[in-house]
Image (cartoon, rainbow, N blue to C red):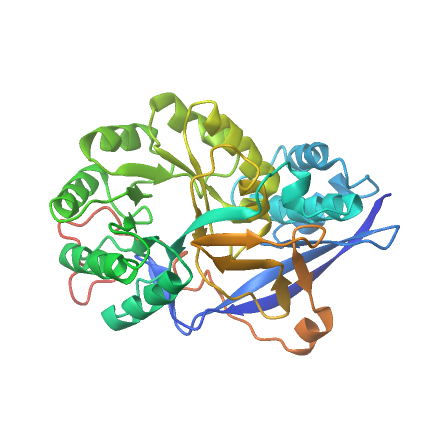
Length: 386
C-alpha cells in the first residue's frame, strides 16, 4: 500500500455559544475546522482534523510511503521542515497528517485506534470546559448543568482578569457539578495572561476561598523558571504544555520541576501526544490532553497510556458534516468500535454548505494583548487600547 494524494476540506463548528478566554472571544461561536483526507492506491482513506498549514510542503515526506509506518513518517515530516523549523502552525499540519496516518493504520488492521494502540478500556475520563469567558452567570450554570447530566464532576473556568468574579464563577461551576461529587474539582485557566507575581497574588487570593485543583497556563509557555517557582508558592497544581510544539520544548519544564500536570494540545496529533505522555510517565507526572473537539483521535491515544489523568471536553457536538464514533457519559468519553479513529465525513454535505468562522479572529482568543502581564490592576482601564 502507498500514499498517493490528499484532499483538503473546510467545515465549521457551531458551538451554540460565544467561546474564548481572557485574550478574547468569538461571538457568534462559529469556528473553522480544517480536514485532510489522505488517499492510497488501494482506495482506503485516512481522515485528519486540525490544520492545513504547510500541508503541501509536508506531503512529499510521506508521498509514496506505506502509511502503516506512522512514527517513521512523523519523523520524516519533522525532517522535511528541518531548516525552517516545525514549531508553531507547521506543527499543526504535521499533527493533522499524523492523525490521518493513524486512522489509516487502524482501518487496515480492522480495529478502532484505541484497540490498536493497546488500550484495555474504551472509557476516557474527562472534565468539562466551556471556553466560557463570555458566558454570564446564568449561562455558565446552564452549560455546566448540562455537563453534570453527563456525569462530569470536574470543570475548568476561563478567567484571570476579575478576581472577585472568578471566585464567584468557580463557585457556580462547582455547584452545577455537585450532583456527581461532594466536592467537584475546579480549575482556572489564565491563558498566559500574568507575570509571576500577579500569578502568585491571584492564585493565593482564590485559595483563601476555594480549593483550586490546578492553575493552567499562568505564565508564558516557555517560562520554566517561573512555573517552578509558582508551583512551590501555591497549593494548586501548575498545568501547562498545550502550546508547546515538540517533545524538546518540554525538556526545560521537566528539568526544572516546573509542571505538575503535563498538558498536550490535541491539535498536535497522536504521535506527539504519545511521546510527551511517556516522557511525563518517566517522571511520574500525569498527562492531560486539551481540546478533544479539535482532534478526537487523541482520545484513543489517551485510553492507551498509563498516566492519563483527564481530557478536556469542550462540547458535546461535532463540526458540520463530521460524525465521531464516541459518546459522552459517566464523566468522560466512551469510544466506539468503528475501525480507525472514529471520524467519518460527509464530503458532499461539507462542499455543498460553506459557512466560515475564524477562531484566530482579531477579537478572538488567539490574539494576545500587548499589555498582558504589564498591568498594575487586572482590569484594563476604560478606553485603553490592547
